[in-house]
Image (cartoon, rainbow, N blue to C red):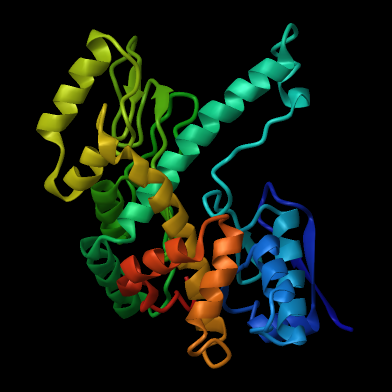
Length: 333
């Protein structure tokens, strides 16, 4: 069997070995290929009747294993695409990771970090679930896709904002990515890992933020307005009032969901699940259109097990996501 050895970008493992039949099946050399999680593949294998044949399930499992080894959510021309928001909201941290800076109670620190990071991760996934339900976002994305296709014939999304490091803000992007910058600023994104995987901006505490620098001697906490303001006292209350008066109209609905004391916050968990659900459903239906035709009821059962919810819950999710689920995935970048 022929093995493809692929050199990776700096910072990744030395190479990936892709069997020739896997490369040909998924067109890995020229396509952006999304990966299914091992748990979902397992449910597809165990729950009768089988929706996919043994060869498909075996290939999906093999590709997923390669991705899992590199924490990748996709492969772009055989290079891993790292995207952290397609897994469970719960973050796992071992005491071995915290004992270096928490000598007295590393296990307690690990539990506290798990709770805080899982909480923040759920809000990011919730925002993504809300974002993909906005027709205005998809319209903006389609305009960007059309502009890139007509200008170069090569669909590639360029990173717009880099994470600030060492107090250095990213220099102004070249004009060719002006459209990406406008879209990312509007929807509070750091970049688009692909047209299907938007990456939200993260809060930062630095002397500069992704948009501008601050004067020397100042510290500027950068909290994008897609994140909730938490805590008690005058400062959080003042920040909440400022945000409420300045929020842009296209983000107002999300702002109301995450507002302090909002009863709508319970929707965040649902939206987080829906973001992952629509992605994996689109992957399956775009990859196996004939095999999965008129099989939505069986898919609902499988995803109910995957997300540990009732089948009725998944049915409601699918109904609410009907617009999104009709969209094809990106073929290239």
